[in-house]
Length: 410
Image 1 (cartoon, rainbow, N blue to C red):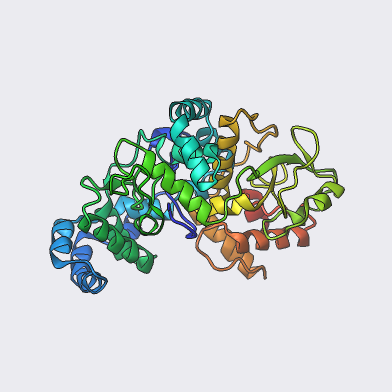
Image 2: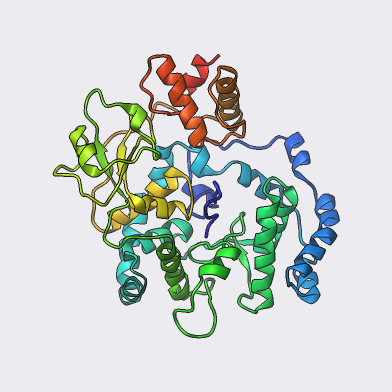
């Protein structure tokens, strides 16, 4: 499924390749030297024979391998996308502007109505709310209108050869070759990361979770009929523990003097404890109780706050980026008739570039705050390090990796 628990994923439009969907800030690009380091066509050609042995040992036939891999091309843009993914490089407000645009919401309402009987059947069969399934469909492929146009085998071969996550992508490439060998797909195209179909499954997720809802003997996620793809998405979410009727999260307001050190997914409390601390729904009323919950500030202390429940972690199985999970959840809420996010975002701030994010991690480490390495990804360890630095400086420990924090570390 998309990239499962791997901290990655496709760039825009959920699966994310359409630059028109992500106007605004220019993306960080690889230098010519970095492109050279990333690989070449000659390097890929030299890598293929060794991989052939491993693929055949995993059960791929020589005939399938040789036909599918013949003429496979190295794509440096695929490597660039892998290292600069929008869910991790854009501000959440830029991401949400397109992920939950008014057009996408309107199209989601139409998709829900047009496929009502199918979605009701899927909800009844798998116990997954139909609006969440539609939201995944909408963010991953614009409700099936853009499922990707890159050769899946080429994308996966490029990333497997590139080596940064070679073991992961080799497994995906072997699974893709088995899909071809089984005759399940003819025109195998998808995203730069090798995800494909209406809801952008990775090949190993197809192996484990794809279902044949229409009973035609094929688990077809790629055709114009979305039935198998939408059912497969519900099967995936069910497997990871989706609770029907429970919220993924909701926007909340925090009281004056709130301890921002508690705003992390790692701090889970009963809803009653959050209520006692003064946390209230942004829309008014009382907090719903769907089990242990955490408070997140994806845009820092100046942005919206969210109380999140276990369904949040289920969506994370599709893509671990907070921006993606909130995008899916909020899109589902809007399709259901919910309101837009009430709080404003700190739009005067910009996202850090990849070199700046790496510099931030390096400076945190030098200052004695362990960011978990220097890779440019603002994961839990980096956020925790930012919080620790902010507390040491007497700042609100919201963990937001801003240019101000980088400057203070100078």
